[in-house]
Length: 426
Image 1 (cartoon, rainbow, N blue to C red):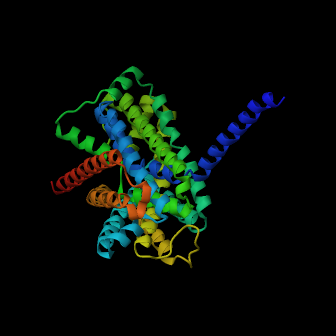
Image 2: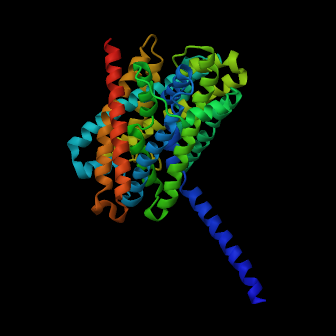
Image 3: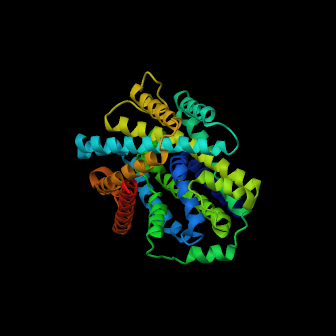
């Protein structure tokens, strides 16, 4: 009888162990998935929409290196947060001094203000498709995202953000409804194509450069610290990061597919993601257009919540001020003051008649392009410090991949920033 009972006991024990891993992952999950998905904000969706509408499937191959770059950079952030228990801005101040931190935070604040304006512009444009005025929708959106963080706690806010991530599936549905030629899509995905045409190169840089923004590293590491994820849970945190990166680029894939299969095939010109949603209606049907517009609204509202939050975390960390969604307003006045100010200014600017929003958004990309090489360089110096990371420093292979990723993404971001400056002066 004992011999027969052992396999049953082993089987029950193995199942229990597997469920424990699942439960542990669900407890840790959040920072990686949320950060990666916010990367598909109004600016990212616009970039992918333009790539599909102007160049068909010819840029879709870039999503593979984009995913690798995103995983490499965000994994290092997750590891530093879990091992040190400190946010990135905190580590930069402690190890590189106040002056470097001050200049980095100034650029981050300017870039994130521009990005926040872009998100509220996305809210306005997406709901105007349904006949709703921005003078109603933008103030309501601003009040909602402010209320969510100020009167919530970290667990509540994270749950809302994770639910928002699910709605990105609307872009998968849009891509399916566009009825693309899947054999062509597969061939173009596996066949890198390059041309020296200036417009093509600029779009290529835009698609790759929209992958990694400086706020992402600061937010993810701060979120890991506030959630209390330690080194013993790091393997689950790494899975959280990889899952988020894969999901966000699957969404990007279907955005490109939806626009390539319809707008590119018919030669329809667009300038924004909202234009894409409008143009899809006669080509792919009301459901496809509505899902595309809803996806833009969800992404914009989601990002309008996270970007000011990321900035508040970063600046407060950098200067040693109290921070965190689990604290009340009186306990962290600087944190909530920054969050409120960014939302109020970002929403108000979108409501100013005749304001050149595109120029403002361009300037934020310039700030991102200047700041990104600095942040990534400092990150790599920190993650290779054995006194900080112990046995969790980068290995030789990881360093080679990380430095290559940092150099390539930094050069592309600087190129994009320079292109923006030159186009504004033209």
